[in-house]
Structures are given as structure tokens and as C-alpha cells.
Image 1 (spheres, rainbow, N blue to C red):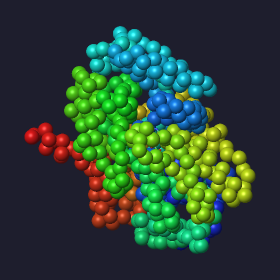
Image 2: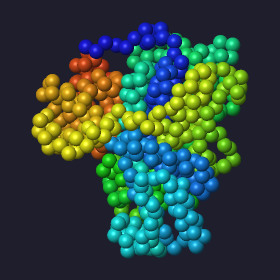
Image 3: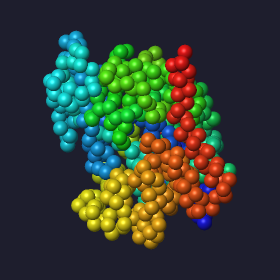
Image 4: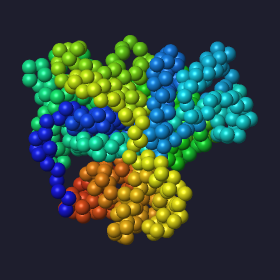
Amino acid sequence: MRARRDLSKLAEQQFDVAIVGGGMIGTGVARDAAMRGLKTVLFEKEDFCYGTSGRSSRMIHGGLRYLVNYDLGLVREGLREREILLRLAPHLVHPLKFLIPVYGERILHRLKLKIGMILYDLLSYDKSLPSHKYLDKGKVLEAEPALAENGLQGAYVYYDSQIALTERLCMENVISATRHGAVLLNHAKVVRLLKENNVVSGVQAEDVLTGEHAEFRSKLVVNVGGPWLDKVVRDVRQERQPLARTTKGIHLVTPKVTTDAVALFASDGRAYFVMPWIGFTLVGTTDTDYEEDMDAVRAEVDDVEYLRTEVKNAFPRTSWNRIFYAMAGVRSLLRVEGVKESSVTRRHVIYDHETKEGLRGLVSVIGGKLTAYRGIAEDIVDVASRKLGRKISCTTAVVKLPGADPTELERAKANRDSISKEHGITVEVLENLVALYGSRYKEVLEYVKSNASLRERICETNSDIMAEVVHAVEKESALTLSDFMLRRSLIGLRLCEGLDCSQKVAEKMAEIFGWSSQEVESQIKAYKDEIAKRHTYEKEIAKRSTK
Ligand SMILES: Cc1cc2nc3c(=O)[nH]c(=O)nc-3n(C[C@H](O)[C@H](O)[C@H](O)COP(=O)(O)OP(=O)(O)OC[C@H]3O[C@@H](n4cnc5c(N)ncnc54)[C@H](O)[C@@H]3O)c2cc1C
């Protein structure tokens, strides 16, 4: 049976940096800090990538729409990071082709689009992706026959990138940080910041699974709690004004409608997207102020209907009646008031509580995009290093992530038949392993080598195998059934949402952790409850349609 972790023992060490939040930015900070030799600990109250990072549109992009606000610096930052991520994690970050259909809009609008396209190309002068081009109406309908024909003039084509499996990118940062000596704890909630005489000297953390508490001392606390960030620092700040403006965004997951991504303008002028995603179409997003419980955020029926009305106009021959599920997340943006939600800048700010409020030992990160997570982490660790009197340069832009070993990735591609045969698995299973774990697919296959029964598929519909469950527990800190289903294997994102195999996976995890049958039941219930959050709007929609 796997030994329980001992928080109190871990807390005996003195840390340089304690990070609150294990989203994309937090795990990026942990990787960078550890690579620069800082003694680092990270706390995540749920699981890595549980928060906003796992509920985004999953685009790695400059953000064409930010050009409208003349936010050239933000666009350039995104385009630079896009290129870096294509190199650092080629197994996870893939180019994505976008179409922007042009309808009989006013000449000024078309001119703006043309200028936007040219600027986007200029700002991505160092790109490896193709530049924009224009397609006439016939070519557009050939490419995307479901688009509305009426008034269609043509479309611009441009390229950005997609991180379809953000959860896996987060995990790669966790693994890299751990390899460099950091301690990263999921299901460990920071319940209090330790403060003495206006100095924050660490955190009190709770192991959410056991109830154990421990105090961790650290020279600096970095608050990357995403939309929870104000809650994290509430008790230590004198200032009552929140730091972030929080807005909700939802996505619909539907049957596949388009081949490429399509950028569209809603009837209220907002930009939204229809994108291919793991065999589905992803439609999103919305942008509405949200100040309620961040853990309770859901797609409401009005959010769903807003998007559905818009896509019905854009693709009138598609029924859009079938929605598999809807995901909701909350952005934490700079607190800019008096403007529409979508007009608030997506730039990040490192808020040094010492210079702003005289509170030493604490920095918070407000705003920032998933795309820029690595660069944001670099900025934070630069600040941390300065404060701690260390001068080690950042290398995260050049050192590839753990699953990105080019030789192994090439080997897996070139020898897929022989590797599959050697391990008694199908090519499809191997390809799924490479898609999820990159060059680390070999680690999973090591389990198959030592125990042939682990090559068994978890279910008939997905390509995942039982070895992944053991690997997730032993190598990727999966502690609950939901961790494995939603953020290691991603079975829970697929059409079946993992409902048929949850018992089988829970029983395998029970063997490793020594769970009782009662615990197995409660793991399954917790998982099903998490899945149910994506469906809460359905009853209301059914009610409305029978009225
Ligand atoms: C609908 C939507 C679409 C988006 N689309 C894109 C996109 O396409 N491209 C893009 O670049 N960006 C996009 N974004 C923005 C992007 O998702 C966020 O900027 C990014 O995920 C923020 O990462 P984070 O690590 O700061 O926050 P999070 O991922 O929210 O991580 C914060 C973590 O802190 C943890 N935490 C909170 N309190 C505590 C505590 N007390 N103790 C321990 N842990 C705690 C939480 O559980 C959470 O996991 C989108 C955002 C939304 C909402």
C-alpha cells in the first residue's frame, strides 16, 4: 500500500518560495524557481489545473482581438510565447488554422480586419507558422460548408496554436519542477498566510484529504490563486479594495461542425470562436462579471442560449440541439471598472505587496493569459530572485518540457508498429500514449513490461490502458479518481465522460491506496458530482422548451 504523505515532515524545511495555486501560472513559477535553484514549495487546494487553466478556450495565441484596443505589447508577448511553446512542447501545442469569414460588412470593418491581419503578421515576424491569406467565397464554403452563405464575401485565413490538453502541459511543469527539487502538493489548501509585524513568513496548509495541518516557512509567498487570489490574501491586507476583476466564461462542447477554427463576431460585436477540440467542436466564450463562489461556477442557461443563438446564425444548417456538456471558468483580470468585461486588458501585473502596501514577503499575480504563463513565471521569478539576492538567469524558454525529447518522439513515430508489437498493444493505444505523455510514453510502457495485465484497455471506447492508472499515481501525483479521469488521462473529457469505467479505475486505485469499498464509492460519487456540474443547465433548458 502506498504510504501517505507527511505534511509536517515536509514543513521542517525552510523554503525560499511558497507558491499558492497550482494552475498553469503557478506550476510555471514552480518550474522556473526550481530551475534557478530556489527552494520551492507549491500548494494546490484541489488538483493541478483544476481552476481556470482547465476551463479556457485552450488557444495559444497573440489574441487578434486585442489589436482593437491597440494592446500591441500584449499581442507581441502572446506571439513570442506561442513560438516558444511550439518548441518546448511540440507534442502538446499544435498549430491551429483559423478562418475569419467576411460578410457584406461595412468597408471600414473590412479595412480594419485587413489591417489587423497585416499587423498580426508583422508582430509575429519570428514565427514558424504561415502568414495570413484571403480566400474567396467559393473556397471558404469548400473548406467550411456549414457556414452561413448569405452575404458571405470570403474569409481571411491565419494561424495560431492550440493546447488541446492543457491539463497535460500543467503536469509537465509539475514533473519538471519536481525533477529540479521542488515540492508540489495537490489537495493541499493554504488556509492562512503566516504574518508577523507586516511580514509574511510562510503559509499554514491543510492536507484536504487527511485534515492534517502544517506551517511552512518561506522567505517569499507568491500568490497565483487565479480568481481566488483576493481570498488568499484577504486576511493579511489592510486595504479592502479587491485586486482583481473576475469574469465568467463558458464553452459548449458539441458534435464536430468545422474542420478548422472559425473566429466570428456575435451580434453584440464580441469576438467568439468555434474550434475543433479532441474530436468535438468547442464553442466559446462568454464574458460576464462574476463575484460569487469561484468553486461553484457553472454554465447557466442564459450563457448557453447566448452562444447557441450566435452559432445558429453563423451555421444555420446545423441544428446545435446536441450539447454534450458545458464548461465554465473565471478569469482574474486587472481591476478596471467602468468598462465592458471584454474591454478589460488581459495583461498581467505583478503586485508587490511590499511596495504597494508595506507588507513584506508577498507578491500576487493579477491577470495574465494561459499563453503567456511561461513569460509571466519568468517575470515573477525575476522579482523573487531580486528580493532574495540571487542572480541566476531563466532558462525555461530553451529547456524543453519532460515529454518533449525529440529523439524519443521521432522514434515513436518512425517505429510505431514495432513498438506496439513489442508491448502487445495496438498502434492506436501507442498513439494515445504519445499524445498524452509525449516521449514519456516509455514510462507507462515500463509498467506493461513488468506486468502484462496492465496493457488491458480501461474501456472499449477509449484507447487508455490500465498502466496509466498506476503511472498516474506513482509518477504524476494522482490522489483521487477525479485527478486521474479529468487531469491525467482525460477520459472524463471524452464523449462517455468516463462514467462507464469509473468503477474499474477506482478499484485499481483502491489496490494502490488501500481504499475501503466505502472509499471507492465516495470517490465515484465525488467524480460524478464533478461531471454533473457540466450539466446543470440541462434541466432548465428542458423546462423552457416544454413551456
Ligand atoms: C473562458 C475562458 C477562456 C480562456 N481562454 C484562453 C485562451 O484561449 N488562451 C489563453 O491564453 N488564456 C485564456 N484564458 C485565460 C487563462 O485561462 C487564464 O489566464 C489562466 O488559466 C490563469 O492561470 P492561473 O494559474 O493564474 O489560474 P488558475 O488556473 O485558476 O489556477 C489557480 C489555482 O489556485 C488554486 N488555489 C486557489 N486558492 C488556493 C488556496 N487557498 N490554496 C491552494 N490553492 C489555491 C485553485 O484551486 C486553482 O487551481 C481563458 C479564461 C477563461 C475563463
